Length: 420
Image (cartoon, rainbow, N blue to C red; front, top):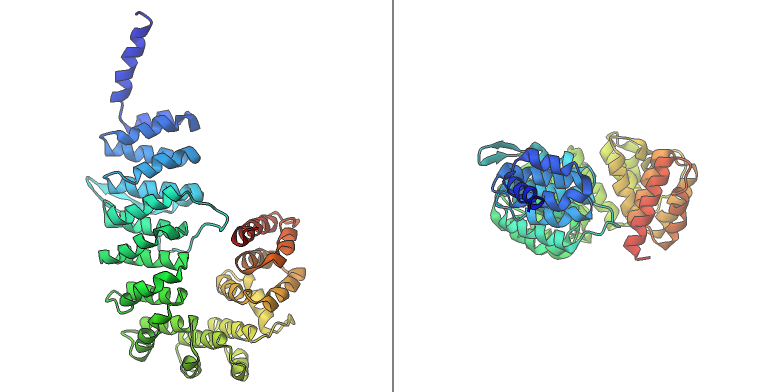
């Protein structure tokens, strides 16, 4: 009995020790402390539960996933937000530092948080997300304790490419909360399931400018041809310039032959964004008769965005020579520009879906700069085929460690996408 007494005495003390300080002390034991830290999710103290989520996120590892999923069902919105960020942090290390939880300011029972406007992150194709994670996030979009928690869950689904939660994203549009609607639409763009297209058409004339612009953009990305009549109507009579530009750009993503005259007319617009959309539309219509006009635009354009679009259009017309002043070389050289590399990369990703363009990119690898190699690896990961494997394998063994790392990731992504 004298041996048992200290044990019986310690248990009540531990159970009553429900403070953030205690959670931090336990977490210092490392991974083996995860079950104990997870137990604090049952605390009556919100501060303690929040600290438990923070420590689970910091500890990481597979054993943290189930407790974080459980935390998404907490009644407190901050706990839900931090649990969502914690799940994302497992699949996208470092995310928690910029996630919504990092901006939370608490005042009693209410919280304020600010979304990071940059919303372009997605996990690599080879990253396999547990189905239970997507299910939990989908449920959170419907039953989150606050609209911020629901919007954050929508963002997480997009980053994780959680196509199984597409019905939840569609349902989230019915909240009529602008942030939730925006994040749901942005997530649909990342998932890229064309089945979602017809379900967002009613938002193309939404009264909130950001929601409308995002819905228009999503309709284009999802190639929702059902939306074309509405989009043409917006171009003809836009509520504002932003809506008109977005609508023309969306039409340009899925143009029909009847839109050719519209694009030809808009290549002379004063607004450079309209010129960009018009040239992109002509590139995708791919009418050989437009080549002289596109060549003239390429030679005469002095603004960077329309000039890149003209280079893209000529690439799509088959202009693939690598001479120093060629449009194709111009696109590749722009991969070295911190300001325009993402634009050039997007054009090359689209072009590389065609075998002649891929063959030309293989040739470009021979004298590519470091930045060009890194971007070309990503481009081939997104649009390459089995013939791209040897080129990515070579990049994965490059003498530059950054290039080698990019080549290896690209190789893994390509193989995951092709199932090889």
